[in-house]
Length: 223
Image (cartoon, rainbow, N blue to C red; front, side, top):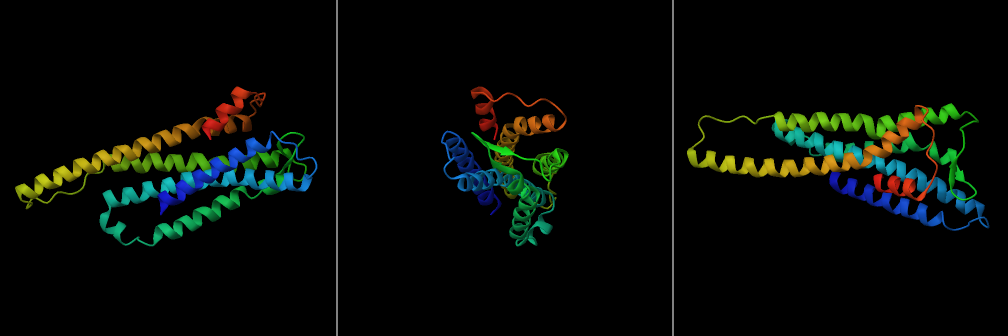
């Protein structure tokens, strides 16, 4: 369930970014209301779905940690992932809902206006979003996956030789699968790091880079 939710969130992010880039090449001055709605919805979708994606990955890391280190406790949580996904969607929507009010259609692209005329409020909201959508889940994912690598399941001394060999083989296969999952998690986090670090740097006062084809292309790939 968590993997499906993460895949759907990533797919919606790609669709929303593609539509934003396609729409930026067309003039929608004849229908200002439609252009404004598209900017608001697509921008909100990209930010909210990115948050949902990384939190779903955290959910899977947590379940993997419980399955390896606390298997008996993990078996009692068969309904918890569904409730957790609902909570993730709700919280990700709440932390990004302000974009529906701040984002509007500009002369050639979507622009962000200060909330209530106070630009510092926008900066605070971006900071909350960055912490919720990147810093906090990434730190917990690293902790959970590190614990999984260091955790060793208990062995029973009464285990027979043939069963012990079978258990060792299954453990090696599980270890290989775990490393594949960790590699995917590392690549996913690594690709999202540049964009989130750029946002944090801008929040700290770094001048915004002038838009050009290389800058825009790099940010699209990072997303």
